[in-house]
Structures are given as structure tokens and as C-alpha cells.
Length: 129
Image (tube, rainbow, N blue to C red; front, top):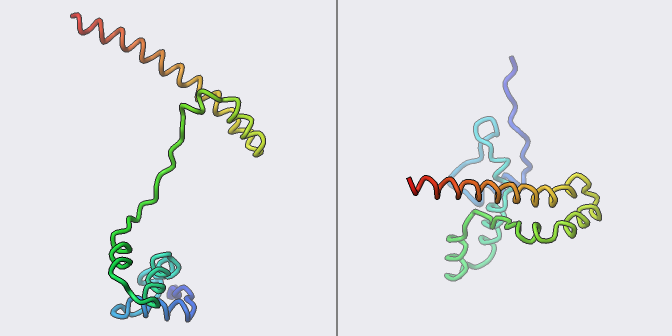
């Protein structure tokens, strides 16, 4: 069986990787996968920071930056109140399957409310006992 060949990494990417982490020599992809790391935004930011003079304010803000991106917040209440608007928007954007979702959200919410009412009656009855 032939030995696995290391993935190709261009000379510029090797040079950037060595400038960013001079204490770590470049290793082939068979040992570790630096290819993914070479094209990440962290390496790009590090090279940009190396080219610019570091100021105390920018270096502190860069170090404390969170890696998590903000999560999307979907306004379900607005969708329930205006299902026609969202269905029409989906049709205009040529999302035919998703155009049914606002009506489905409304019906599922009504089912959930019914279950909550039934459960409330059961809880009140069990509290009496």
C-alpha cells in the first residue's frame, strides 16, 4: 500500500503560517490539518495585526472577542399574527414549500394552546386532591 501524500499547501500559505506561529514548524496534512487553519479568519487577523503597529486598546479588544456569532432570533409572534404576509414573501422569493410554514406555525400554536388549557385543568384538579 502506498504512503499517503500530504495535501498541497501553497508557498504563500506556508510562509504566513510560519510568520504567525514561528515556534511551530509546518507539518504535512497527514500529521495535522493546518490547511483548514491557514485559510481561517484567525490567521488573516493575525497577519493583519502583525503588519499594523499594536496599540493597547486594539490588542485588548481582539483578545477578548468571542468566537460565537450572534444567533438569529425569529419573531414567531409576528409570523402568527401575519401568516399571509410571510406566505406571500416566500412565494415571491420562489420558496413554494416554505410558503406553507406560516399556516403550519399558526395551527401548531393553536394545538399547543389547547394542550396548555387541558393541562391547566388537570393541574387544578390535582392541586385540589
